[in-house]
Amino acid sequence: MSLIELHEAAGCAPVTWGPDRTRDWWRAWTASARGSGAEFRVLARDATGGCVALWLIDANPPVVYLGADGEAAVLASDVDDYAALLASGVTPAVAAAQAGLPGVRAAQARYPEFPALAWQPEPVAAIRLATADDAEDLTDLITTSMGYAVAAHDVAERLRGLPEDGNVVYVAVTDRVAGWVHVMITHGLIAGTRAELGGLAVAQPGSGSGSALLAAAERWAVRHGVTSMYIRSGTERTEAHGFYARRGYTVRKTQLALTKTLA
Image (cartoon, rainbow, N blue to C red; front, top):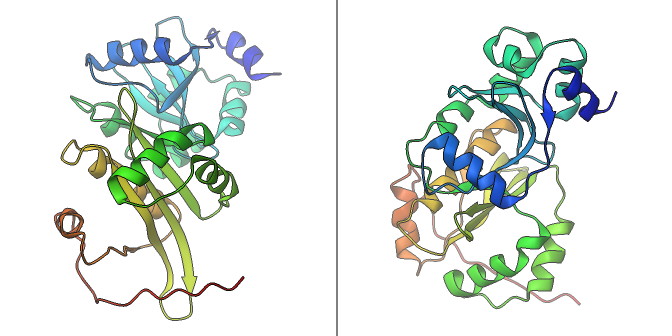
């Protein structure tokens, strides 16, 4: 059976919502006028008004339930596991209420932060995976916030070319893309395996978007089994140094960055 058929069999109405409808639903659910809902793609709605959605934080995103009475639960680690759950006769609302179900328990252990993020009293920004469609906004942030000259088509191509295994780029979305972060898993003979920040920029320092992006990057790294994050920051970026220090990062050393053109 298709996912649409499985939803219908479970008493859910499949939906196809655009950004405006998703925003209106999310603002109603959170009772906030600030949220965009951009971190979700709603798949279906049950008879109580609860919604099943993809939480767009991984290449194979988890499936979550946001109930009409404020329930917030991860149902499955990906769409395939969710389809199997529905095929077994378990409805989304029942799965949300029964965390002891094996697949549900494993998914909630992988994404333990979801309820707290959903219940934030005043969401700062939606955090979701970046796509090539974000290239223009990312280019503006790279140019204005970081001072690097780069073309939007190059940014789009680099986004498409990043290996999904070991890399993630998130964007913070309010009424527009308000920031981005890139984190990767690196492997070395000396340092071993660790997460490394490839870049972080926000349109408005102090808005909370940078903190939300860094926290999302750290959670992604933990899900991928690493225990430390490495950040390189130019010596002149003193404001950035303070930002990271306030979030628990310490200076280990200073070093030169050397480059050579090979072709």
